[in-house]
Length: 197
Image (cartoon, rainbow, N blue to C red):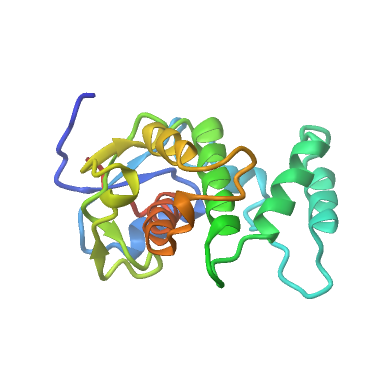
């Protein structure tokens, strides 16, 4: 793995979320990584500049999937849309474990790798935003990834997959503290506030 030290926070993606994250990180220096020119390759443009989310009590995964399929105008696979919305809707970190949350976070990251292509981006696991909305405190999450100080996003996904049973119903031997470190890592990646390694 080649390491590049930019001295800047790396934000993967230049859609609304990536640009918002870059603005929120000011005055820190930020490097935006995008496979397309700004404004043309981001999912935000495909989403008509909006964000689709099932927020109301009456919203169901099936209703959200149907909205996604309709808005996709023929380019959305119905089975995938239904699966993704069901997994995301089930995400929950309360209780004795974070299994459903980890499955949703990992799915979200894997979709980002597939659609955006940031699988080879290195992530510093010794400095992960503990609260991705403000990124004012950091934690070392390397214990959730075999003690590695940095891994690429694809390596993070592969390691976490090795810590789950088939189907993603049990993660990290049900140790909630370790699950929390993994969740925070995915949360930082998915919110585009992970630091490059």
